[in-house]
Amino acid sequence: MMNIPDSSNPRVVIIGGGFAGVSLARKLKNKNFQVVLLDKHNYHNFQPLMYQVATGGLESGSIAYPIRKIIKEHKEAFFRMALVEQIDTKNKKVITDIGTIYYDYLVIATGSTNNYFGNKEIEKNSMVMKTIPEALNIRSLILENFELALQTNDAAERKALMNFVIVGAGPTGVELAGALAEMKKAVLPKDYPDLDVSMMEINLVQGSQNVLDAMTNKSSKAAEKYLKALGVKIHLKTIVTGYDGNTVSTKDGLSFKTQAVIWSAGVKGAPTEGIAETLDRANRIRVNDYNQVEGFEDIFALGDVAAMYGEKYQYGHPMMAQPAIQQGQLLAENLERLVKKQSLKKFVYNDKGSMATIGRNKAVVDLPKLHFNGVFAWFVWMFVHLFSLIGFKNKTLVFWSWVYNYFVFDRESRVIIRPFRKNRDLEQQMNQ
Ligand SMILES: Cc1cc2nc3c(=O)[nH]c(=O)nc-3n(C[C@H](O)[C@H](O)[C@H](O)COP(=O)(O)OP(=O)(O)OC[C@H]3O[C@@H](n4cnc5c(N)ncnc54)[C@H](O)[C@@H]3O)c2cc1C
Image 1 (tube, rainbow, N blue to C red):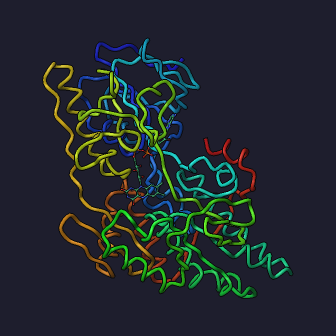
Image 2 (image 1 turned 90 degrees about the vertical axis):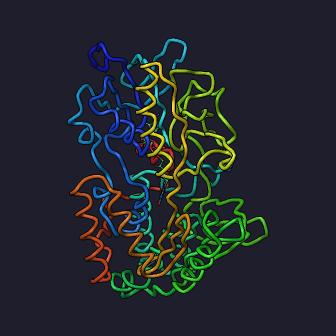
């Protein structure tokens, strides 16, 4: 049903066209393999800039890139838009919503998903930002809440509509809070002159004692200072226990009346069905030093979904783009070695550092041996993100949007293209 011809070359089926899957597929270009790349979306997306889509700074198209275009010049490479439902390791088959395909080698690069730690109420009522449709939902919700705030005569309701609660102060939470604070300062007062935008609140709630916990203390403190200067209210050591759609409750009795909660407090692996015995407590697939799934010679897992335990990375590598890219690159080499019956090369993570931006002119950067923040860090952040984007068109689009937004103090994409309805079941169907 998938219409993929037989080949004399071994077939590598890659599930997921994210950072890991694409980096592997690119490296397998014109090697002696038939490559079949499967993804439920027909585009590769660049999550690090997703918060700018959610806050109207970038159009969604500028962070998405057609997967077909990435492999269009590869010999014997096929893309199929398919949702993988299960893998059948006994018969070496992948079962999808468009049919079943046999593999010689299977690579699972399905990434991660939101972790609500079992709290169904939060899952039902809060917003998340793992996919572009979800980022667009957040954008719609922000704008719809402002439209509603303008219409109501009830002061308490208006306050709740203008109260944004972000749970989790990792890079996503921090960058989103900074962008919302900038909207409050420079954009929303112009759009809603008849609304008292100063009433808007941005509450950033964090369970541990620092924002950007995974970064150095220096960067955490700098980010906290920047956020406070922008008017973001930070609540550290505060554990959110529920959100019923109207009120956020916390372990130590705080509560926030709000119509917008964004959950960025946890991720877990998003493996395919059929490999349950290899999962760890974060739902990631246990792999050896060659990204081979425990107990299999012909199945590999890469990126967020893979847990390669080691001395330095006790529970696997950080769920970030670089480990995914580097693992994909090495696996291409190792697959060739495997076919030639040569010994495989161990994966060694080359940590290039991490960074986050907190609005205009402000960012924090941790390089392996250097930590800095401020305007220079912001330029480094922009440069790195611009050059990491795939495609000349996307780079140009993002560059011009940034130049425009910087000089005009604007966020052009303030449009409600697809209204967000607070009905999770419906939304989930649309997001699949
Ligand atoms: C909002 C946000 C901001 C981020 N910012 C940064 C950052 O600044 N720096 C950084 O290094 N990292 C950042 N990350 C993390 C980074 O995006 C991930 O670590 C990275 O994407 C992992 O790559 P991956 O290839 O493992 O998974 P992904 O890139 O998530 O790719 C997984 C792919 O698999 C597909 N897929 C999943 N399940 C199925 C299925 N059953 N059938 C078919 N297809 C399937 C998905 O559609 C997707 O295309 C951010 C993440 C988010 C959500």
